[in-house]
Length: 412
Image 1 (cartoon, rainbow, N blue to C red):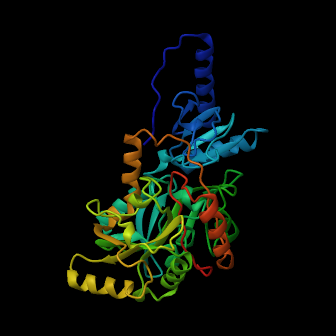
Image 2 (image 1 turned 90 degrees about the horizontal axis):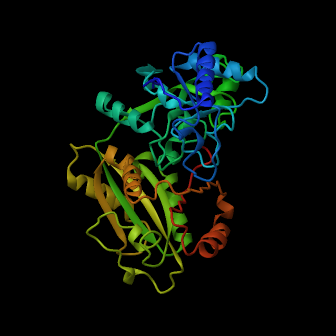
Image 3 (image 1 turned 180 degrees about the vertical axis):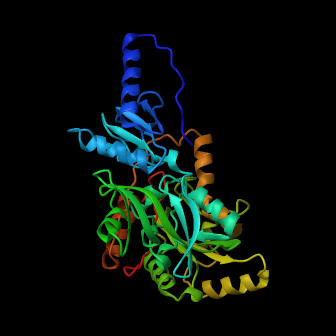
């Protein structure tokens, strides 16, 4: 995983001096990884948001926590020199950049840790902060038949990256965000100390680093809770014309006992028109089916609402058993009659569903477009006003991208 730089033939004395500077810094830090000028690859001066671009002094690919410790200690002793840990570059507002500073490419450490353990009778996995969640998923399922309990919608993100934020998806109503499914961290602090922390060992650092936006340290290892991985998922979407009915059903589903609800609950808003990105075509899971607006009541407004649900099962389960279980769960929901779409997909295929959207976007040349993004936690008492003001007025014509909305439990 370590990228070693080859010898570069320079056309000018300035370029030659720059190469000498890199070599001097590399030798002074005694790094086992690699260091390059920030201009060489260009990846360190951009992020997924595409709204900002800041050029770093150097991009550093560490071999492990010891390299990261040396880098942070060097920066701590140098006035005005900043350091940013870059996972897969999915920050929105330039958080993974360091203007004139050091950018640490955490992906180079992705293979450093992968060990199955049992903690208090439950399985856990030690993984690197620079590992991608999609790689953690594949390796855990293929090797052990296990998987982390809580996810994000998009899995081409690093472990340390999402744990420094929250990690929220359709399983969070049951297990909490990813930050609630970690028992131990290894963190390089702002002083450059390599520190192991948990709820009982250095707890202030543990809870500061989890969701701390990288301001309390760089996560180099995480111990993540696992559970048995299902084989398949019944993936379901049901459509609502009225927001109150949508929220009532969503809140009911996330409040039910584990064996009386779905395993995944999310939702989104879409436009009541035939726009291919923002409207009816964005809802159907089965490409052979078309959205039939004739089912909608005449009272339907400019936007509609969709509950997205997932039901886990094993290959050994009888199809009729799965059908009966799903029918029982959807029977009491108040969605528009006839507007239900469902498919059966593999568990990994379901969790990697956004990967396919990424591949399509790259093929269409739109993946590198700017991606402004906003996440909000809105209280239950204000959500109807939010719908009336934001969804039904401000963004009633769509935003050219997803508008997700789903309930979480405060206790999680």
